[in-house]
Length: 355
Image (cartoon, rainbow, N blue to C red; front, top):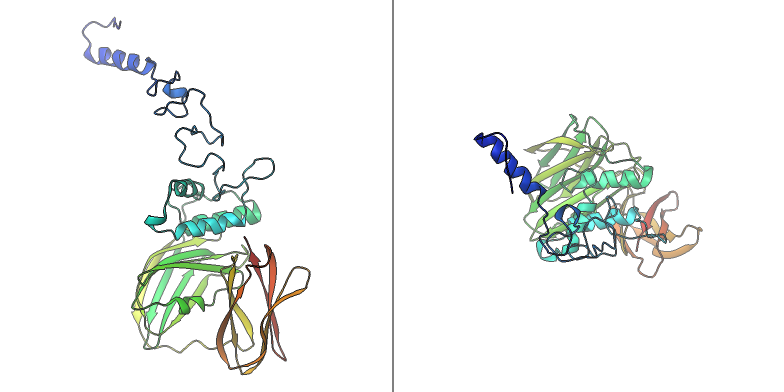
């Protein structure tokens, strides 16, 4: 029974009815628990079981009820105390998630999407990767800042080369963009030179590429990155996102131009240009350059300084850009050192194997 002491005041009567409706018990699934207290209001679950304690009962949890997909714990793993672990495995899992197509998505993909939304803006992208790296390396909280920093991506074409230049007034922590091309350009992307400490990955479908790069070390201070893709294969560059080292978005303008420019020259000493992906599992691509022809060795060492693999054994090699792969499927997870050696120069870089 409802009543109002305000006579024929229609607004007051309606307000009384609405308040009464809100106060009525609501048990949609008829399990004996009102909606406000029910962790699964549309599914019968009288015991309110919630194994992973994520707020969704087992009867309606789209996740697997074993893993705990808290913020940053993209792969949902637990330690010996059943607490979620946030580490570089989650960075790899987040990048893998980016590269899934619609046919590969599953209910658990939504869990990883939510856990990978590090900065809470409901857009999972390279900005979240940078924030996640900062969480792992420095225990930094995600950045919720709206930056006024400006950046740009320049896309330049000449007769024999494509150039992509990313720059900003503040240090860059990562970036992503999409490419469309006339033909497959995987081998060109595999040979791209990134700053020390950076890692990159990409996915492709019908000559459409999604490219992601980020500072894995968290300490590589760069305001400009130049990428050179030989031959004029690229049709367009779009969907550009640039992240600062602090984990906020840098507003990016895209500039395109066709012009003649001097070709990029080789470094003046032998060196390792990039190790990718890094972390890797189990294939690592090693890109290196030689200013002159010489004998070359490429060797892998473990953390104890023990030689574990010889990829190139004192082979006479011409000047230019080269690459080789290391299949680490038979080796345990951990840090490894990749060394290139000529009679006069040695260069060494670290690669992390995560299985």
